[in-house]
Structures are given as C-alpha cells and as structure tokens.
Length: 401
Image 1: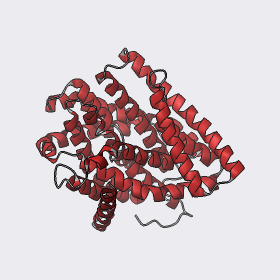
Image 2: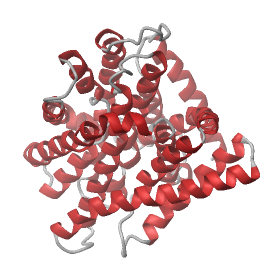
Image 3: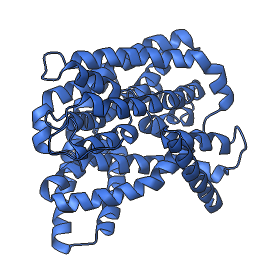
Image 4: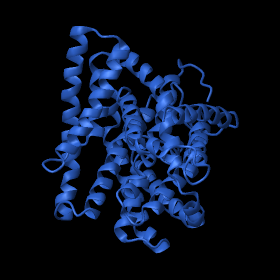
C-alpha cells in the first residue's frame, strides 16, 4: 500500500508538470495516471489501496471547501448576495433536469439513474474554479463588482446543492425515506443546519485557538480532523435530521476569517500545501476506477449528454444576471467559469457503482468524461477571458496567468 502511494505521488507530480508545460490543467495528467495504473489497464494499484480511495477523496473535498470558506468575506457576500444565491442553484437545477431527461434516451438506464447523473454533473469544480478566482482577487480583476468572490461563494454552494440532490436520489434508489416532497424539504433544512453547525464549530475553534495559541500546522490538522467528525455526525443523524456537513466545513472557514484574518490566511497557506498531495490522490484514484472499455463504448453519446447539460447550464447562468450591474463580457466570464467539473465528480462519481446501482459504470464513466472535457475547457477559458473581460483595479498588480 505504501508503494502504491509513492507511485501515484511520483507519477502524479510528473504528469502535473508535463501537462502544465503544454498549458493544460495538471489534474488531467493525474487522471490519466490513475487510468493507466488502475485495474482496467496496467493493474498496478492493489485492491487494498483502492479500497480506501473513498475516504481519501472525501479528505480532498474537505480541504478544498475549507480553502473556499477561508476566502469568503462578509462584505463582498452582501454586495453580491442575491445574484450569488441565484447562480448557486438555478444553473445546477437546469443542467440536472436536462441531463435527467436526456440520459435515459441515450443510454439503457432508468430515469432515476438519469437523475443521479444529472445531480453529479450539476456540480461545478472548486478544484478548478477556486484557484482561478483567488488569483483574480489577488491581482484585482473584477474585484470592484465582487465577481471573483461571487463565483467563489456560488460555486461552493452550488456543490452543496448538487451533493444534497445527489444524496436524495441515491436515497430513492436505496428505498430510504418517504415522499419526494418530504425529501425536497430536506434541502433547506440541510443547508440551514449545515451553516449553523459550521458557525458553532468555528466559534469553538476560534476560542480554542485564541486561548491556547497552537501552531498553524496544529490548527490546520485540528480543522481537518473536526471536519471529518462533522461528516461522521451527518451520517449518524441522517435518520433524524439532515445536516450538510460539507457546507458546515465551508462555514467554519468563513467564521475563522471573520474573527482573525491573519490566522485564517496562515491556515489557508498551510491548506494549499496539503492540497498539493490531496489533489494527486483525488484525481489518480478516481481515474483508477474508470473502466476504459465502458468509456470507449459510451463515447460520443456521453460527450453529447455532457454538451446538452452544459448548454442548459450556460443559458440559465446568463439569465441569472439579467437586470444586474454586470456587462456582457462579465456575464460571459461567469458563464465560462461555470463550465469546469472535477472535484465533486471525482468524489462522488464512483458512489453509485460502489452502492451496486446497475448503471454505476456508465455513471462513473460520464462523470470522468465530464472532467476530461470540461476541466481543460473551463480552465483555459477562465485564463483567457479573466484578464481580458474583467475590469482591473488601477492599483492592483499585474497578473501572469
């Protein structure tokens, strides 16, 4: 198992370097490494190592949501609050519905399995979006209107929304719960209680950090560990009450930033270093679960399904900005920013297969295809349009993207 970990880190770092040299997202190289090392190609990774991949993917998701929370400022959220709320839900809903309707037509799957695919594809990627938005904020692009902050916050809430919908549909398949109406009521309940849980935990952590003044490394480890406990708590309480632990994780970061910006910055820097390893593990392991034969069989139909879903997302994203202060170029940038998929698809794409759903291989394959297609498309699009279409603050530094 330790040999496998060393292998994917070495190969992942090499692939990341090579893909960046040709101006493509490094995560694509990591995904390719996982596919090649997985059981369907060269079968390098042991079954014992693959068995713990779900837990590793979850830790990676915790890290990226913490980083996002540590960059959410109250003043900027107030300025873009209403628009951010629309953008965080409407595009995901449109894309999910379009995919849910079209998927059973293209593939031999049920409508429920189509809805599960729709929920998975409805999430935008923090792994791709967050670094770009942080870079834009640092160098003053779009900051006057709060565009990077809005898209950063909206993308995080969008993921929570998609994950909650995904868990609801997965619950339908497993025969959990009662009516659709009752399950849909669990969405606001999950979001509200998740935020409250995160704020309470954030208050406790801030009190502890202020009183005992641990090192930044210890604070970071404590936050990651407690975030894991919150996810465990969500599972324990699942039959009693719905709590979005992932949103709670982001709320912890938000609270810590509110109370001490310097400390939050130090923790964010440490988390960015942790993410270097977490990112490699996340994308190589999800690649390792891809059945390349099913991927080839899915082919153009899978690409078509993803394209149709993106069309629905893009149109609805544009409509969300109707009547706002944003000009056409800024709206188009926001549309482009909502294209990339990676982190959530990597984290939950394999869950239906692990749960024994008949269409699980197709679901995983489409999830991975969405990463392969949209991650470079969105990353390149943001890199090109960010510095061309967004207004730069006069006193900001020059950015190299």
